[in-house]
Amino acid sequence: MEKAADEAEGGTVSVNDLMHLYGSRSFGPIFVLLGLVVVVPPLGAVPGLPAVVGVVILLFSAQMLFGRSHIWLPGFIGNLSIKGDKVTKAEDKAAPTLRFIDKMITERMSFLTSGPAEYAAAILVSFMALVMIPLELVPFAVAAPGAAITMVGVALLAKDGALMLLAYTLSAVAVGVLVLYSPLGSLLGL
Image (cartoon, rainbow, N blue to C red; front, side, top):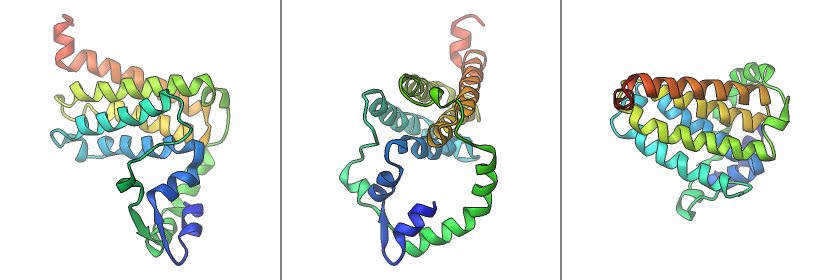
């Protein structure tokens, strides 16, 4: 946020500018934002939204699987921009919360967020994005895979392997919700 606010002083910041600021960690913030869309009530309960978000997440995680170092966006999305003063105001409002979160998150067990582990994270995010589609039929159940995707995003952004382990745990919970509460469970005889 601080880098974006500094970059924005006096002008505008485009989505491409933000992606370049994050560099190889650009997948993290996108997964956080899209995961939160389905976690935050009442958005997760809007019919059709979890499926659309799941498909968009799948498109981004596929880029990660194919080895892209940062997210590619179509030109019309990448060129969207925000006025610098709005970015600075957002950074000022978010700063206390982000400082609090920053105290809990640190770069640790980074082997779980880099190299081959990035591919495992991309597979996990892809699977969770697919899980969101049938869970849309169960009220608020998409919060489980959404939370897992959000946690993967935070782990990738912070290079925090402990959070990646938490993301795997949340994914197991999401699969449990899928099996027990979705139509898939009755098809399997559970």
